[in-house]
View 1 (tube, helix red, strand yellow):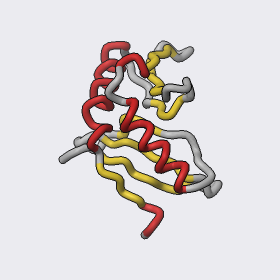
View 2 (tube, helix red, strand yellow; view 1 turned 180 degrees about the vertical axis):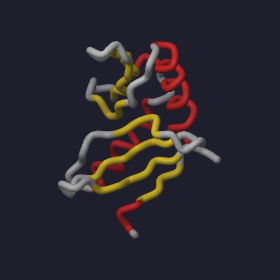
View 3 (cartoon, helix red, strand yellow; view 1 turned 30 degrees about the horizontal axis):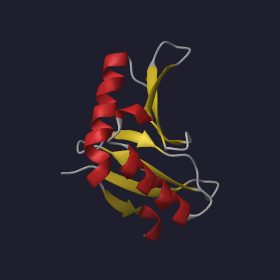
Length: 112
């Protein structure tokens, strides 16, 4: 099984996407988007930028855990990871996004 982008709707009616790895784990989440079109544009940006290691930024949270942001060429954050216990596991998360995002299928759960 390949990675998947899941488009869903938040309680405030904004659209968002999560990138799930083949094991079903969420490896990247988006911000909220006002329209589905802009959400899909965000997915395209992730697919385009995810293979480039320089587009990732690792950050340490106040609690000592790590997460990463994937940025577009304009510097805007287009996806954020979950928290990881170590920097090494955070880097594994980046590798998973780099591997899964470019060819991930898109599942729109708002059309059910």
